[in-house]
Structure formats: C-alpha cells, structure tokens
Amino acid sequence: MPQIQHIIDALERLAPPALQEDYDNSGLLVGEPHAEVDKVLVSLDVTEEVVEEAKACGVGLIVSHHPIVFRPMKRLTGRDQVERTVMAALRAGIGLYAIHTNLDNVAHGVNAMMCRKLGLEGMKVLRPAQGTLAKIVTFAPSAHADAVRQSMFNAGGGRIGRYDECSFSHEGQGTFRAGEGASPFVGRMGEQHREEETRIEMVAERWNVGRILAAMRAAHPYEEVAHDVVLLDNAHPTAGSGGVGTFAEPVGWEDFVARVKSAFGAPVIRHTNPPKSPIRKVALCGGTGSFLLSDAMRAGADVFLSSDFKYHEFFGTEGRITIADIGHAEAEGGISQWLVDQLANLKDGFPNFAVLLSEVRTNPIHVS
Image (cartoon, rainbow, N blue to C red; front, top):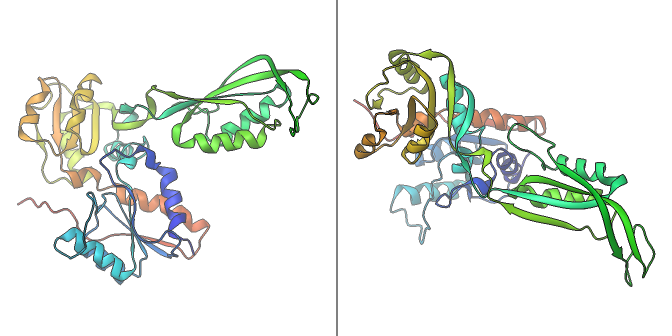
C-alpha cells in the first residue's frame, strides 16, 4: 500500500513545486506524509461535499487542482466553508494535496490539456518562465569524462526544450597538490600534479541541481570534485504561463465556438468581436488569463481562450485579437481526468491502489 509521500513524489515529478507562483499554496495541506492510503480521489476543488464523497468511498487522500487553503489560518472554528472543509478532512483522517500553478506552469500540464481538447498542434509556452535554470560546470579526467557526463544526463541535466543530453566540453590541463590526509586518485602526496581534464558544462533546472551534483560526484573519480553552479536568466522553453498552438486547417468562427463548447462543456462564451478571417493560431491559458493578453497578441494569435476577464479588460485587444472567455472551471475541468490517468501509473507498483474521479460538481457558477 502506498504512502501519501509516494503519491506526492509522483505528482511532483509531473509538476515541480518550484514552478508554483509566489501567491500559491500547492502541496500537502492536510495529512501526514507517511500515512498509508489505498484510494485517492481527484477533483478540481475541495469542498465539504467532496470530503463527504471521499469518506463514503473510503479514500485516504484528495488531490485537487485548486488549494482549499490560500491564506494563513489562525483558527479552526467552522466559521466559513474553508474551515469547515479542513475540519471535515481532519475528522475523517483524509489528506488534502493541491497541485495548482506548478501544474499550470509545466508545458505538459493544464495548457497542453486544453490544446489537446481543442485539437491544436505544436503547442509552445506563451510566456516562458524566468529564473528557473542554472548551468553546472565540472572538470573530470579525460578518460572519465564520458561516464561523468552521462551520469549527469541521467539525473536530468542537459535538457533544453525538446532536446536532451545537451552539453559542451573543452579539453585542458588541471593542477592540484594533495595535502596531509588526502587520498588522491592520481599524483603523489605533497607534489603538484598536472592532469589532462575535460571541462563539462550543461544546463539544469534549478530544482534538479542537487540531484545532478550527487550523480556527478558518484561517477567522478576525484576525492574533491571541482564544480561551479551558475544561476541563469535564460527563459525556460518548456515551463511558464499559457500556451499557443495552431489548427492544421484554419477554422471559421462559428465552427470554433462549437468546438470550444463541445470540448470544454462551456454553456456560454463571452467574447469580443470575432476575427474577420479564419482562425489558425490560438493562445490559451487555464484559469485566470487576462495577464497574458499582451503575450497572446505578440504571439500573433487570432484568438485568446481563457477566463475571468473583467469588463474593462475586454477593451485591451486594440482590435488585434479576439478574447474568448469560457469560465474558470470550464477551462480547467479536464485536468482532473488527466491527473487520474497519470496517477493510475502507480498501480504498477501498488496493485491494490485505486484512483477515483470525483463526481461532485464544484463549480459555484450556474448559467440560466
């Protein structure tokens, strides 16, 4: 039977916590990491009704996209639905885990799901993340460089967009002198040694740096491994906000509206003036996306599909793009099934483990 921590590990491989926004509160919100669970319930939101559903199904952990707790809680008295939901989960011994903006910000997450549902191809990140990359540099005896380099690749180093095992190497000569108590791989105690070495450098995601350094040291023959870690300002090509993709064949406005309503179960689409020409390129963002409007226009998108636009924000198109607002829950609703499919892979290691999709409608907005 898996522990909650096993499920957390799987989820955080899909969406590293380092990618969540500063305002967010993703992660384990209620529960003990080492508690054993044999059933997980996945939902878009956590409400009292979802906790009751989980309790009735014998579920030990609820995985939701939206965190039930956004702000610090100073007391638990049941005064509002957030406190009541948390209290209900505690009484039932049910853990609560949220995977929110970190799942928004990975290229294979929410926005990729939206692209698939709409039939868009060639998705790219609309606003690539900044400050998420580092460069690792080390120096290895030339005869051991391939082994060190491959170990770093295997740990996640050298991935740039759709490419992996990316590195740069340069031959040179290193010097060192072993002092008292040292156990040098080559050279004599107290004498300066010169060794033909290879400089190896590669890009790494910052949250993987520790793992890559550990792999590097394990494969390296030296007792003391010289290395540098340089933080980069480079944009991350496969992490960030929003997405943009294209239709294989241009789509007329009426057809586009029908596709959106069918794919996302959207009863209503609020929009600005429809485009005059057939739609080829679509920018999108799950959840609240008005902050990406300028990015969508710079990308040359015909339509920006998102939600939660305020009245005055609809004036910001300058006639260059059509805003299509389908509602927050509608935009992100499909991510719950995607998470169920991903967590189902854990069944290989835990045959008695079950993943359930919540049947509770948590969307508080109704259209009459």
